[in-house]
Length: 191
Image (spheres, rainbow, N blue to C red):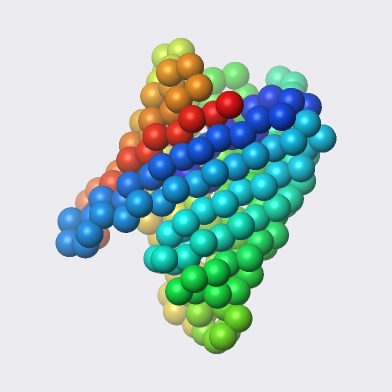
């Protein structure tokens, strides 16, 4: 979900690549590359690295169900494999809802470990944005992680996204009032 606004055109083959940089005050920088593809008959594939865990590759496949209208929507149930420092599988859904200049996107996934069920987790990332100019979006973002038998971790923030042709540059600022604040800077290209 990092990029948002992914499923934009009906019945056309398209895809994209993204590079995200997580910037935290006390840790090293983390690079998270993402690539995705949607076929003309709405089959969807996505690959990520360092997303579910560090030094971990995840590959997903699914089907996109979408409709363009006054209120447009897109929903993609996905299933995937997770390999690396964390090994297991994942099921989830990506979704978007658009109304004029207002956009909502959300990613929900349940990721399970092949080794220990205590490493399983439920994760969601949701954005609510408004198009303030032709190529500028701003909004609020919420991430929630539920680890096995631990309290839920909620991270709130805000973002701004600039779009230029097929390029998108999002900048997220999470936990702004806390010592655990961090930034996510991205650069994506759709084709």
